[in-house]
Length: 153
Image (cartoon, rainbow, N blue to C red; front, side, top):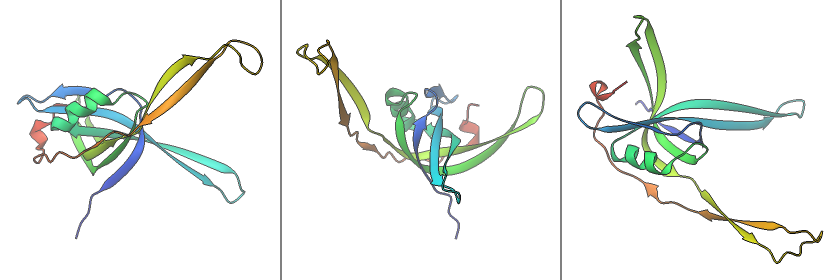
């Protein structure tokens, strides 16, 4: 039995880039950063950041392009795929990507600045900032199998 399944929670490193295949199928790609924090044997806090290339197809690509922006948090469920191609100098290039099968938008913070009554503890004018966290729905759209000839890049 074989299994190729990836679960990632991270933040976008750039805005999604929407493209269309020659036969009109939408595809979006973006970078995702994930962090790992641990304490080493000397008791020091360590942190490691990994960067992933994410590809989303079909209707989900349109939704990702509409709602995701650099810095957005997202949960990705997908599979690892490595592909090769020839560049303009006829060199073989290789890239490993996560093909998203499902994704869920992370909490989105909306800020509302409201002016206080002008009396703060240090007697100066101040603004208070309220942050409201909105949970967004999970997106689960079944798509047909993606063929290598559909990849526009």
